[in-house]
Amino acid sequence: MQAMPAASRGALPGRREVAAALEISAPAERIFARICEVESWPVWLPCVRRARLVAHDAPPAQGAEIAVRLDGDAGEELYEVDGFIAHHRLSLVGAYSVRRRIEFRIERKTSSSKVHVRFVYPSYHGIVGGWLDAVRRRRQLADALQRGLVLLKGLVEAEIAD
Image 1: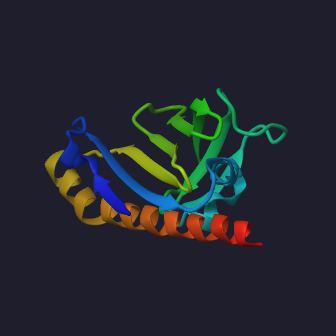
Image 2 (image 1 turned 120 degrees about the vertical axis):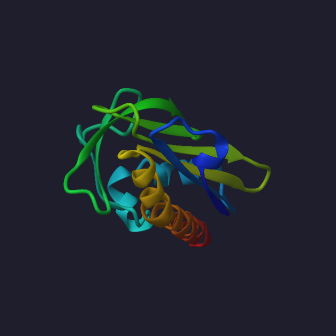
């Protein structure tokens, strides 16, 4: 498992990206079902304090709105599902800022699946802001994504064992 800041991958100026991936011994359908349980994100994703579907009567789908409160943020941010492929990809883009993005992607393998998660967010205040972001927020987010995938792996593999 690895978390990699996008600065080393040619991110756009003012945009930061953190990504992590982990192989889970479970079918993609089971993992994707857990990811689509938006209200349970805070259980396994430490950087999320609260997440909810705005329209409670339907599962996530193209165009659905999801309100997310991240650790350290004062309020909820509204995201829209802009990419949805069943059992493979769930992509959210900020409703008021296209510079914010949350993506989950699953690669199906023979006896396991590889889960990728990626957060993209804006970074302000020039060089100083970028440095502070690299020292503080990006590292915290990378650590949270790594721990979150390990927790997701534990939850999904425990369900299979039962």
